[in-house]
Length: 134
Length: 134
Length: 134
Length: 134
Image (cartoon, rainbow over all chains, first blue to last red):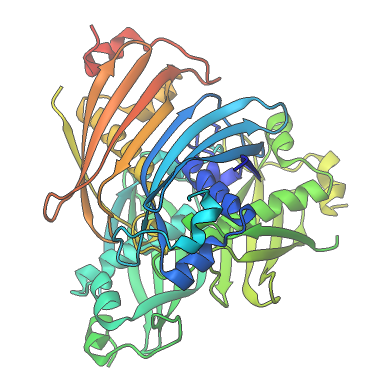
C-alpha cells in the first residue's frame, strides 16, 4: 500500500511552557493519522469496533523527535504499514512541517487485534485485503 | 457533608506556551477531586459504574480563573455538593495554591446519573445517604 | 461579524471509558475554533503573541453539554464574538454534529488581553477593527 | 543512584473508549515521575528552568505496554538514570499496578539539555553530582 498523508494543525493546548508541542501529543497525532489511513484504505475503524468488537490495541510506541513543532504549525504525517498479519500490525510514520517540509519526527507503533475484553484475537478475514494481508 | 480537600501537583504537560496551566486542565482536576470526594464519602465511583452500570455524566461546567497556576505548583481543591437529588448532582469547587492559599479558580459542575447507553436514570437508593439525599 | 464555522473530527484519544468525548476536550476544541475565527478575520493569533507580546488569557468558561459526541464524529463549531472591548473579549459557541446538525453543546468563554507576564493590557488599536471594536 | 518510586492514580479523563488508560498518557506519567525523581535527588526542575534557562528536551521515547491500566488503578513508576552526560540523559522506567505488582509497561526516554531557544547546551557543572555525572 502507498503511504498515506494526513494533515493537521498544532493546537495551542498541545504546547507546553517550553513553547513547543508536548512530546506526548505526537502519539495522539499518530493515532489520528492511523484512523485516516484506515479510512483511505476503505475501512472504517469505528465501525470495526462496533460491528466486530475488534479493536487495535497499542503494544509498543517509539518516537524520535527531530525538531520542535510550534503552535499553529501545519504538520504532514505520512503513514505506512511496515508489517501486517492477522494478529498484529506495525505502522511507521514521518512527521514533517508543511511550510517547508522540515522533518519533525519519525515513529513506529506496534498493535495487536483484541476483543472487548482486551484479549488478543485474529483479525476477521474480510479486513485482510485492506491491510495487504493474504 | 463537609467540604473535601484534594491535593495535586501541576504537571509539565499541563502547561501551555503562555507558561501557565492550560484552562481545560482544570476540568480534569475537578473530576479527579470528585472521585476523591466520593472515596472519602465511602463510595467507590469505579465500583458503581461496574456493579450498577450507573455513571455520572457531566451536563454543565462553569469555571472562573482568578490567578494562573504554574508548573509544579501544589493545588488544593475544596469540593462540596451544592445540590443532590436521585437524578442530578451539583458540585462546587475552590482551587487554591497550597504554598500561600492564593485563590486560583472557582467552579461548578452539574451532573445527571445515566446508564451505559447514556440514558438518564435514578441513582439506586443505596447510594442516597452518601450524597445526603433523603 | 458573521459567525464563523470550524469543522473537526473527534479523536480516539479524546474519548473516555463512557464511550464519549470527555467533557474537558470541548474547551480545547473551542480554543481551536477561536484560532480559526481569528484567522478568518484576517488576524494571525500566533503572530500577535510573537510581535506584540499580547495574549488572550481565558478568565471564564461555561459549557452546557446537550448530547454526547462519539469517536470519529465530525463536529461543526459556530463561533461568534458576543462582546469586544480593548480589555476583554467574550465568545459564544454552538457545537453541532455535522452528520445531522444535532446540537452537541453550547458554550461561552471570556478573555482578557494580557502581556507576557500575564498582566492585563489594552489590545493595540491596529487589532480593533478585526474584533469590531471602534 | 537508586531507582526512585513515584505513585499516582489513573484519572477518568485518561481512559479512552476501550475502557483503559490511553497509551499517550503514559508519556505524561513518565514526565511526572522524572520531576519527582529530580526532586528526590535534591534538584528542583522548575528552578533550573527559571534560574539557568536550561530545559530537558525529549528527543526519543520508547514504551512497551504489557497490561492495560484501568481507571482509578494506583500505579507505581520506578525511574532510574540509564546514562548521564553533560549533554544528554537517558531514563528507564518500570510501571507496575500497586495493588498486585503486575507489570503494566516499561519505557525509556532520551533527553538533551537545551536553552530557551531550544539549542543544545551543556548542563551547568553544579548539577552534575545530582545526576551522577563526574
